[in-house]
Length: 263
Image (cartoon, rainbow, N blue to C red; front, side, top):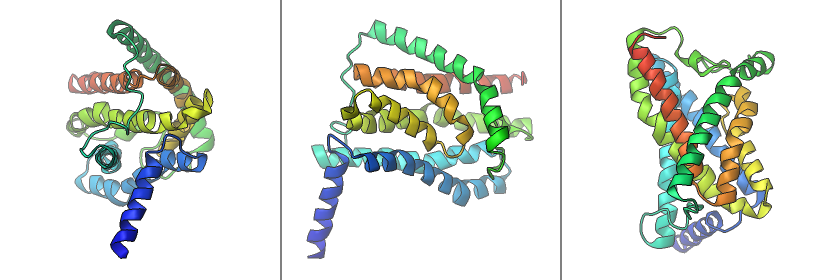
């Protein structure tokens, strides 16, 4: 009886998650709970560990993201196994129609990378203003309007080591998982909201970054074009290219600048 109930419950959860449409409460929960778990992983595991070894606190956030996002990717593959009988993202991650030609895709992604890079840097003063006026109470070590505050005050060798460790993670793997989950798994399941879908997805994804709430406004601005295009063209490669491409570019340049003692 217990085994039957367990199997039935598991089937219900899988069917709910893989349904073509998600309810609004479920949508909000699935967008925001990972952010809550990342903050919990940071406070309970990553921050104490990184402080104990004396490394920049930036590494703690990378560790917290890994603790939550890699298992999240595993859950998506598990859902694929439940649906397809094998570990895959078929039927789990949508918007994989590849509706754009390679040339148009490259041009669009290049434009989006320029947009995200330029606009995010230009909006850093806005992040600072929002932080100074509303979020100085946030208890996270290194919190501030700029991401570089998480790296301030550490020895050069530790900074370089931290950036080299984090480069493949925060520069590529973690943004890729976020896109597969937020744009590939969640966004198609609120497509019935029509134009409201990319708006809601962008807002909730921006809020999901509970560790940096002062960046919500700027994220809304520089992320929305890619989210809208993914929804419009049903092609997740657009947001993957912009998000992972931009973070990899900026992380690589930052790491190189540190190694050459330019910053």
